[in-house]
Image (cartoon, rainbow, N blue to C red):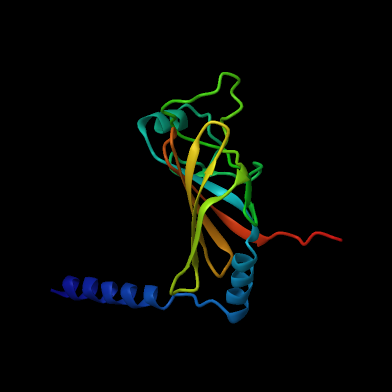
Length: 184
């Protein structure tokens, strides 16, 4: 009987201790994010890629080809060049892709990463109740159409979800920063 009360007590303690760990954004963080979204000039640098976990991805990890600390569903991008930049109605990106492809592979192999260099289509911004933003749009690489979903948070964290026409979905997490102003 004592054991039951012990486990109930631990459960209650864990429930209330986790609830108290909720962080609240400061007004300065909220204002900085609002400015970034309103100017529509920002860049996201990712530190982790989250490919869809498949049997093939597990096989690659088991082969020892992945860097230490990576798992089939979370690959460290630290030390790898990557970015997604939005400047007005234009987008540029270089995001390394990890995952499976269904079709549309270029013969010269220059489309292994997700590279945008063009215009945004159907750009939509929605402010959420927790002072974060959801941004969605469509864009094209050389050989593929993508639907892009971005979540921006007041602590300047960012999450990118990409759905391509010939690749399995992939997500990235990192940080957003405003673009530096051009000098006249």
